[in-house]
Length: 420
Image 1 (tube, one colour):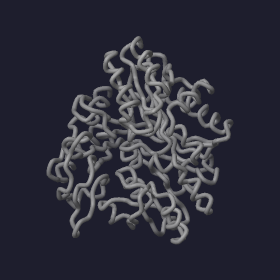
Image 2 (image 1 turned 120 degrees about the horizontal axis):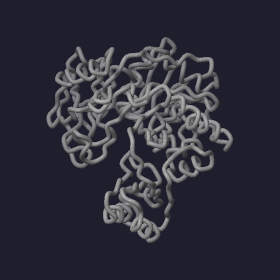
Image 3 (image 1 turned 90 degrees about the vertical axis):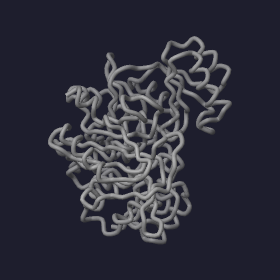
Image 4 (image 1 turned 180 degrees about the horizontal axis):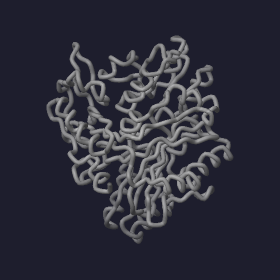
C-alpha cells in the first residue's frame, strides 16, 4: 500500500516509524514532514492545511490510504475531501472532529449524554463573561472555544486574572476567531490522565494510558506548552478506573456520536481528571496527542496499519490491539524560551546509536545539515521493564543529542515515580 501521513511534528514521526514496521506498507509519504523524517519517509512539500493540494497529490500519486493527524486539517474537513475522491482515511470526518473543534459543542454533547465533566457556561459576549467571572468561584478556568494550538486555556487564581484572560481572548483576539466564544468552567482537582483510543464508530479500544507534562519548567511551573514530555502507562489509571471510564465515558461518547449522526472513527483522545467524585472529561481531542503518542506507540505490539484499516472498515472488534507491559518515557528537547520566544537555525546533532529512539518535531534540512526549526525540536524516548528504567535510559539518551540553546525538563516521570 502507498500510504501518506499528514502533518510534520514528533507525533507524525512516531506514527511514520510505526507504520514502517508493517509489511502492508510499501511506500510511505509525509506531508510536509520535517528534515528529521527524511530517512523514514518521502517528504512532500505540501502544507498540512492545504486541502486542495493534499487531495491532488493523493489522486495523482495513487495513494491507497491517508492518515490525517493534526487537529486543524481534521476540523477543516480533510478526511471528507479525500473520501470524496475515494481515498480511505484514518481520522474523523469534519462533523465528528467538532468534539475538538468546538469546546462549547463538546460540553453540550457531554451534557446531552450524561458524560461526567466540569460544570460550565458558554459566552459570546465579553461584557457577560466579565460579569460572570467577577463573582465566579476561584480558581476558574477560561477556555477559547476553538483550536488554539493547545494554549487556549487559562486557570485564573484571581478575579482580576480571570477578567484579563477574558479580555485577551475576546477583544484582544489573542487566539483569533477561536477566542470569540468562551467556555468558562469549574476548576477540577486530581491527577490528570490521557487515554488515546482507536475506534471505528462502534467499537472502542483504548491504548495504554499516558501522563503529559504541559508546563515549561521543572516542578510544573511556567507557561503551558504543547507538552514537554510524557510517560506511559499512567500509574494513577488503575484497572478499576479504566473499567469505570469505559462504562461512563468511552462507550457513551462513541454511542452518543453515532446517535447524533456523526460517527467518530480514528483516534479519539480523552483528557481525564481523576477527581474525588470520579473520573471526568477535561477535553476531547479528535486525533493522537503530542507527545503522548511518542510514549504510547513504542509499546504497541500489534500492526498499526492493520488497526488503522480496521477503524476505516468497521472491523475493529475482530482486530488485535495489544500493548506490552513495559513502560515508556519521552523527554522533549526544546529551544530555550519556548513557548514564548526562541531562536531557530542551530545545528542538530543526533548520535547514530540513539536515532531509532528519537522523534524529530522541529527541524529542517539545509545543505545536508539538520537545523532546529521550531520550539519543540525533538523527543527522546526509551522503553524499560519499569518506569524508573525507562526514565533513566531516556535521560541518558538526551546526552547524545545536542543543539545550541537546548532546554528540557529534568523531572519527566517524577510524579509518576513518586506515585509508584
